[in-house]
Length: 123
Image (cartoon, rainbow, N blue to C red; front, top):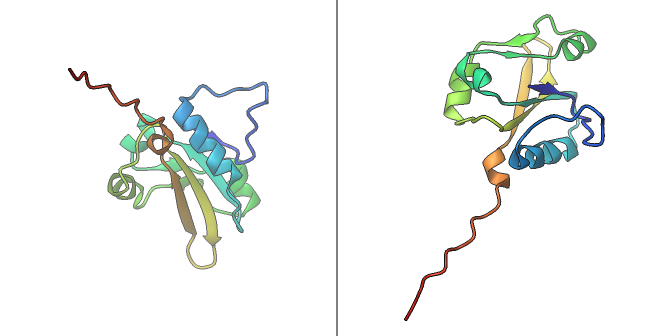
């Protein structure tokens, strides 16, 4: 799911997501990057297939001829063990000879509440 980096949770168009993903989106949105970027909330189809679509508006605004990341995405996602609900921020570093994106990963699991320890009954 592609969402703008300036996502506001007070907007009328609320996204349905887990609390963990919501926290990861908040952290990703709050991060200050020096270059243009876009955010992606991972869904099962994104980790299953070997490509990611770049938002058309982002591609157009930055004169990118491709609106899809395909080469290397599958192995990258597998190597980084990306899961549904994780949030990736793609920062455009360079577009001179080749397009260079830095990927910032905010894992939903990192924002999960720690489990409450079970009490051990002692006699």
